[in-house]
Image (cartoon, rainbow, N blue to C red; front, side):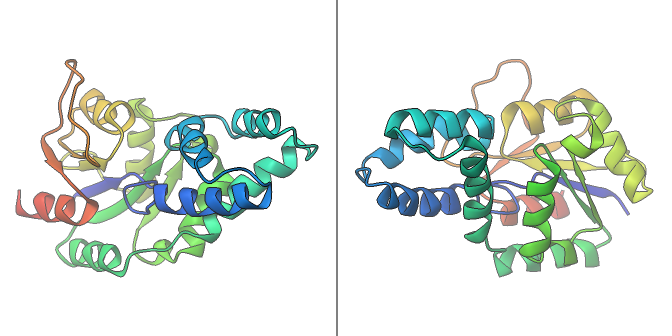
Length: 214
């Protein structure tokens, strides 16, 4: 029963769509032009920018008097509100489990935010466990977080696969721990010469299918 170690945002759950949906509504509420959505998406950088830095950038650009802490809460709650678990992703996870794989989420981010996403979308019903960097005290690509995921699942790392969309965190992490990986390209080309994924797919469903077939 090998482990299937999966990233959360833009892998198991679409984050880009919900962020854009929240962003469009937020900009409308503050009277900003719709074209500013591209700026907001750029500042967010796929969720890699610290939430406080995003909040400060928004406050400065629009001259808002909203406290930064309120904007940080808005960023968290607004995006999570728009998140949904694709039923086909749930089905793929169920098929993987039936085939003997043990799906475990390994994600960087704030514990409250990532835990809320997993539980509110119902993803918790389709995975064996999850490890969140803030809670674990270690982040991808550090190999220790993958070892911790195996420990939590009471499974060996040997034979596991890593699936994710981040070249550095997911594929770099898999390489560091000596595991095969599937990179979700999301329309991008692989450009890191230091390492490479075992497989490249355009979504988590074909990625899971590739792991099962391999």
